[in-house]
Image 1 (cartoon, rainbow, N blue to C red):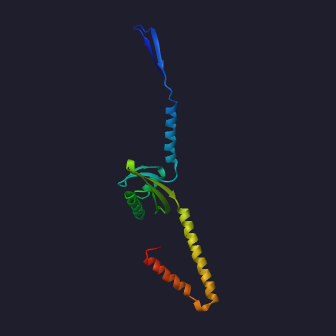
Image 2 (cartoon, rainbow, N blue to C red):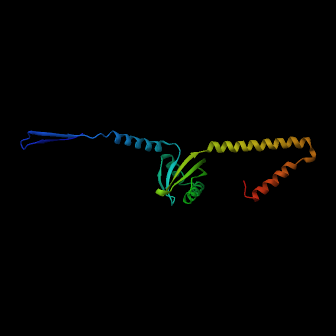
Length: 178
């Protein structure tokens, strides 16, 4: 509410003018804006906004901690540089996995063309990466155990599986595969 009191030169009351405005919608919009800002700030995963030159424009606390941790770690700086390079050429939404500070992160790169910036949404995928590596190792051991059982059964083919595996690895590397 806004009001004013008119009085004469002697201070006597002449009239009172008051008017009000319903600000309910404005307050709701302010509360929604506050909630959105808090959601970003409270997100435990790194969220950043980067310009086309790779400069960080906005970063939530999780992202800021990640970036601050790069200061004295050259290998992590190189990994970050790879991400920034991908950002500079981003034209469609894509994912990029990198290791920083002993953790594996999956960043979703989302270019926002009209406004000239790129949003990065990070997720710590260290557990998934470690689990995948453990499963891969278990699979290798299982295959090795099965081939050992087969070789024990037929000594004529002893070592054949290993030689085939070595050749397959060489072919894959020559083709540029992992």
